[in-house]
Amino acid sequence: MQLFACGVNHHTAPVAIRERVAFPPDILPKALSDVTGARVGSPHGTGQLAREAAILSTCNRTEIYCNTQEPESVAEWLANFHGLPPREVKPYLYLLPQHEAANHAFRVASGLDSMVLGETQILGQMKQAAEKAHDAGTMGLLLNKLFQRTFSVAKEVRTATEIGSSTVSMSAAAVTLAERIFPSIADQAVLFIGAGEMIDLVATHFAARKPRRLMVVNRTIERARDLANKFGGEAAALNNLPDLLAEFDIIITSTASPLPIVGLGLVERAIKQRKHRPMFMVDLAVPRDIETEVGQLNDVFLYTIDSLGEVVRAGQDSRLSAVTEAETIIQARVHEFMHWMDTRQTVPVIRSLRDHGERLRRHELEKAHKALSKGENPAAIMEAMSRALMNKLLHDPSHALNQAGESERDELARLVSRLYNLHNE
Picture (tube, rainbow, N blue to C red):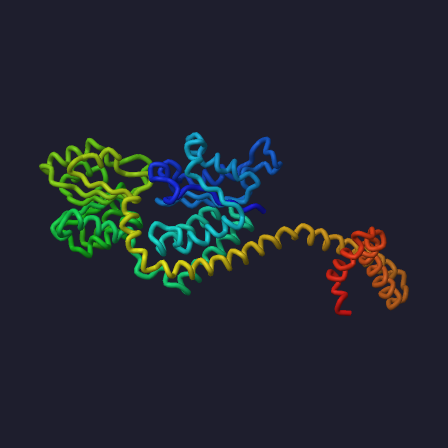
């Protein structure tokens, strides 16, 4: 078993790169099937790029956890799957083997690697990644164990430390930035584009400021209504956005669209209708929902998820002492996980040893049954069977000791004594 984690995150790559290697939910099953599918001419003879794989894809990271003999090939696959030359992705990519991969998974789930230190949303996203891999049939013994341990470690870290206390969330950061532009959110009209979990979180923070108007637009009008009703707001279908955009001062967007849904021309027309009153826009989507050129307009204040990270980091000092405690817990659990992995390496030998013993047992048992069927003395048969079985089981180690050279005899004797617990006799 060879555990590897490879990918990009907000530490190593800007959003312009992260959005190009993201995996929308609808293509995850195909991607998992592709990375674990049979390949012709595999140099390791496995016929697979990866024996097991799970993909974690969020706004801040895209990571592949896998059991593979070809980690570099998996890294190339990540770029090729998205139609990108590997050389464009490689400068931002990390490839973590064994111990480092387990350590990384534990830190990610515990919120230590997040843009928001100690945030809890990533744990749910990792559970979803494991569930998707399980449904796709790409989770085996190694990754099942890794994710079980990962979730257990995350729970222990959050229970035993203060890592999640006083967390400044991305949602709260969006409100903080908006209040730098507008003196009072209560005087503004707020538009949310999308109806997923992220929009729900952000809307909760903005709704607490009681804006004069709140609306949710979404491709599916029913989901928009459900979320809008939660906050006493309005709902509309996404295709009405061109007619609505100019009416709002604050726009927050987070959809799963692979392409921008708010273009430069659309915003220019809205600004003109608003007579150049400023618009505050936050694009929380990866890939981005708003064209980057929009940020160059004089009357638009456009922030991406990376921009919010700067606000978030300003509130992390109070939790830094908990990081040391969390890292200590994680290191201990990584050591335990690696020990489990090491023990799995001996499984084939143990299986072969037991198979060998089973063959000897059956052979002697068959001989005993034949003797019993002939009416021979059962006590004598049992004595003969036990003696023959003992001789056969001890023949190989005895022969090895007798044939050992002078340089290896003492070491072999120590090993045999340990294997058979002879030092206690």
